[in-house]
Each structure stands twice: as structure tokens, then as C-alpha cells.
Length: 310
Image (cartoon, rainbow, N blue to C red; front, top):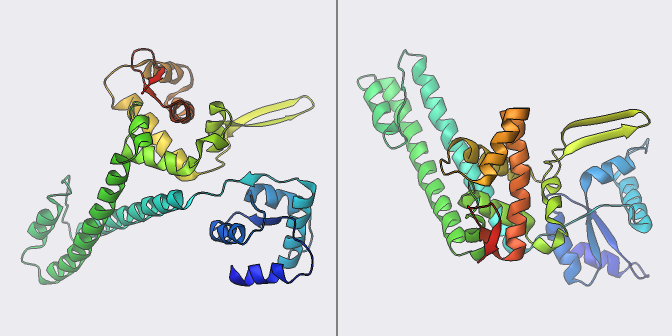
């Protein structure tokens, strides 16, 4: 960022506004340029791509000029620049997810290797997994060496994953907003902290009804002349939040036994439109309810599905 700041300061004219296409480094660059006193805005990538798609020749220089034109005309969709706290929580969640994914990969690899020798692991808890593997390979020197190496890697992944998972739970425990969000049925610690870190600032959403659209949970729409098509959900926005909201909806419909007006609504949709559509609709509704609870400082009321003051 220092090189960019120096470049802009030596241009010889006042820089009115700087536009950055949202990307892996954009939050970092945005923060540095703002500290240096430059008015900086992040641009939504899909919008920029569509706006610049008419260019027959694509180069970095032409992209920069195109973004400058979008800024000049005001024809862009701004992206929220997250706070440092939100970025750190997001990094923690991604690291936890990566370790869990690698842990599952190792376990599946062990199962696959042993299956080739006619050794079936079968249903087993994570706690008893290692003992079961050692039991199966006992007396087979090569398989014992392979199992020992794989189980050692698994143990390391399991330990580090456990540390990060506890860190996530500790963060949720100390966060009053997350605790209130968790009063909604189906919403656990991971859903609450993922949603909160993605929104970051609840005031950037003027209407709670827009929360579902922010995470791509609203239907696509194409209307032209006599043609009017409603498609599947847009899949725009944060995929991780969309996934955890869908999982929360699935838990609410299939695993939570305590009845609520929210669950009744989801079950009614499932009868009319099917289970998958009902879960998507319920995920969208959860996004709206969570934002309303956050803004109002309320908790979920089981009796009539309305928020009450905390």
C-alpha cells in the first residue's frame, strides 16, 4: 500500500476518489488508502465484470480506466469494507473449516486404503476410529506402517481443529449479539458467528427484508416484453453464510422437536413446494429474522415467532 500511496501523492493533482474491485487484497488496500486520507470505495466484482464485458481488448490498464469511468459516472455497486474484528473472525472460521475438511479427507483415505484389502471399517465414532483401524491392520506389517503414519496425521489435525473450534465457541460465548441470535431455533454458535461476521455492521442493511437477497437467497427474475421468468436463487453474496443458513433451516425442519410458528411455516412450504425449496425459503426467512433481532436488541419468542425485548 505504501507504494500506491506514494504514487497517488505524486500525481500532481488531487485524487477525488479511488475505486478497487473487491478481491483477496482489497480489504487490506482499502484500509491503507483510507488511513492515508484517500476516499476509497470497493466495487462489486460481478457488476464490474458485466460493465466492462463490452471491451474487446482486456488489459490491466484498460480495466483501471474502465473502473475509473464507473466511479466517475457513479455506475457501480459498493461493497462493505469489513472491520478488522470481522476479518479476524472470518479467518478463524475458514481455518477451522479447512482443518475439519482435511481431517475428514484423511479418515476417508484410511477407509479407502483398507477397503482395497477387504478390511471394512464400518460405522464408528470419531473417538473409537483409531482403535478400530489398529484392530483391522494388526499383524500386517505394511498396513500397520501406513495406518500409523495416517493416524499420526489425523491426530495432529484433530488436535488443532479442536483448538480452533474452542476458540470459535469462546468468541461466541463472549458476544452478546451472538447469544441473542442463538435464541432462534436452528441457529447454533457457528451459524450465529458466521452471520454476524458477514454482516459486520447491521445498519448497512436499511430493511431486514433485504438480508436474504444479500446472501443470494432470493429468486432470479427475467422480464422482457411478454416474457416473464422466475428462476432459482441468485447465489450472489457470501456462500459460507448461505450454506450455514440452509443447514440451520434443515436442522429446524428435521431435528428440532419443539414446535414453533417458524417451523410450522417451513412445513407448510414443504407440503406445497417440496423439502428443498422449503429449506431455501426458511434460510431466507432466518436471514431476515436474525437481522431484525440484531437491530432491535430482542430475542426470539417461541410462542408466536416474534422478537421480544432482551
